Image 1 (cartoon, helix red, strand yellow):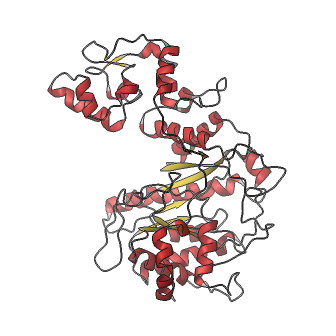
Image 2: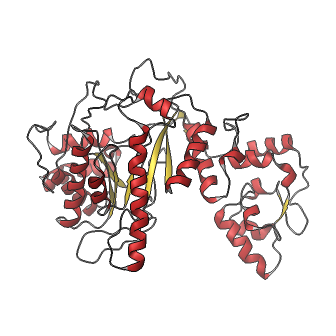
Image 3: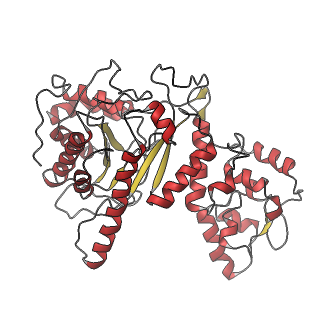
Length: 449
């Protein structure tokens, strides 16, 4: 831990509040909406704890979590990625924290119940290893000197020395390495300083480290945990011409080869003017992002694979229907299914039946036959499901199994989409959109300083 923070760091003349405003706003395009996945409890000697689903209980208007203190360590960057607001060629206010400043901010925000954890990313200051060492020093101090035992998620910097990434992994709950763009061709076109192999190398290192840690804990209960909440990644959607099938296939491959916990999809927001970037006159492709998240859920929890949902002949999702309903309508020969006999795996493929309701059905029918009133109590969305199911050989209503007819009925069911009454809502909230924080910011700064 011999990293020294020189006085030449950008933003050294800024106040802590000015740095916070710049670096929290600069971090808003990093997606961190995920539950902690960690069950580490505090030992009573430190501050905070991390429990499953203990992070994502507060969401912004566009559906993203704001319960983490989400900041960049610095928005200085030696790279010139065409899609990034913080690229070196942009003339924007620059700032950098010190490790102690990040620690103090985290502790004071936690004490005020603004946050339950920290999400720390960064631009590339000087070089990847130097930047990763600063992040390591920050989380080390936060755990050992400030005794913070809450949830910490950091971005591993591609190209950083493996030993630095390895050391950092023992002090955090989750690490992520941004894939940035779905294909190597897109990366070469829009982020010429980044390379796919330098991104995948730390992913593999983290995966191996997690496996080694699990084996050591099985042998020695008190062995240190390495990234206990797993790793994730993020892809920008709509900046390059890949279709949905390509994107979903990449995500499926990442889940299979790197055992990722989550792949996040971030609709491209045009923050720069560049001839290589799409114009997007309709704004960010939020509906496309929404469909990818729905399909991603089907991959992880419903037993689907990418080739079932899309194909080279049909490479993009139906805008009007969610991927599960769209699949069901294209496979009506498999429906309706008998609720009292269908397997758990079959039930998961019925629109309107989720993981919890499918489990409840399997468990409840052991005690007798189920009818539609039972299904409603179990959380089944009958206005979607009734087209595809039977209870004791009967339909809920007399309807014909016809694709056009069912499609029209499903379109009448208002699906919750990422739009508001006036149009698209796509701007992410920053820390300064929280009314409680605005009211308390003067007292907060006085306390920290």
